[in-house]
Length: 398
Image 1: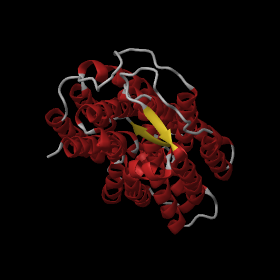
Image 2: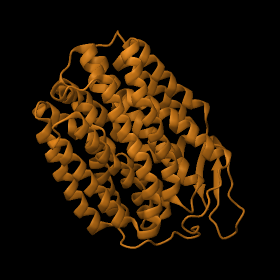
Image 3: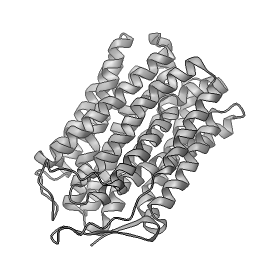
Image 4: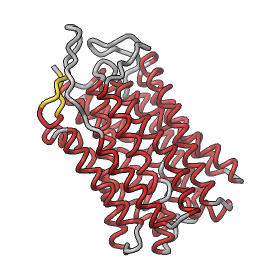
C-alpha cells in the first residue's frame, strides 16, 4: 500500500469520526436532545458555539504539537478526545453536562486536521499532496452521511448512537497509531517550529473569506435539524434524510484538488459560495418542500467540503514550508466564524423570523466572495520551494 493510500485512508476515517460524528452530529440530533433535556434555541446556539470555540483553541495547539512531536501522537490523541467527548454526551443528565462534553468532542476536530496535513507533507509525493489532502478533508462528508442512516434507525435513542460513535473513534485511534509517521520529520526547506508567519495580503484575505463562510455554514451544521422541523415538521428521523443528502454530496469535495488545478482557486471559490447560498435558501426559506430541502442539503454538503478544500489548498500553498500551520490558519478561521455564527443564528431566530435569519446567513456566505487568492511568488530564499500562482489562481510548487 502506497503512503498516499495508507495515510489518505486513515485520515479520511479520522476526519469522518471527528468532524462527522463528534462535531456535526449534534445538529442532527438536536431536536430530540432539546426535547429530552429542555434546551432553548438560544442555549443550543451557545453550546454549538462553544464546540466551535474549543476547535479554535485546539487547532492552534495541534499545529504546534504536530510540528514538535509528530503526526501520529496528535492524531491518536484527537481520536481519544473524540471518544471521551461522545461518551460524555451519551451519559449527560443535564444541559450543563451536555454542554461540557459537546465542547470536549468539538476539541477533537481541531486536533485532527493539522497532523494529517503534516503526515501528507512528510510521506506523500509532492505531486499527490493536494489530492490526498482534499480526499482526507472529504472524510467529513462520510461521517455526516453515515450519521444520517443511524438517525433514521435510532432517532430517539441518541444516547446509544453516541456510544456507538465513541467506539468508532477508538478504532480510528488504533488505525492512526499503526499508519502514521511516528516522529516529526520536517519537509524540505521547513522553517523552525514556532517561526513567525508573514501575514501578507494573501493570508489576510484567506482569513476574511474563511471567517464568513464558516459563519454562514452554521445555519445548517448547528440548526439544520431545527430548520427542517420548523419548515416541514420533520423529527430527528426525517432530519436524518437531510444529513444523508449533505454527506453523500459532500463526497464531491474530494475532487477539490483536481478542480482547483483546472479552474483555479478563485473560480472554484466563487462558484461554490453561490452554491452555498442557494443551499441555505432551498432548505430554510418558506417555499421549501421535502424535495427542495434534500436538494438543498446535497448542495450544502458539496459546497462546504469543496470550500474547506479550497481554504486548505489556499493555506498550504501560501505557507508551503509549514503545511500544518497553513491548514490551521484557514480551518481556524472557519471555526471562529462558526463560533460567532451559531449564537448569532440562535439570537436572530429568537427575535425575528426564520426567513430573515436564513437570508442574513446566505448573505454572509456570498460576502466571502469579496476575498480572493492573490498572485504570490515566494522567492526570497533560494533554499525554499517557490509557489507560483498561474492564471486563474492555480497554485504549483517548484
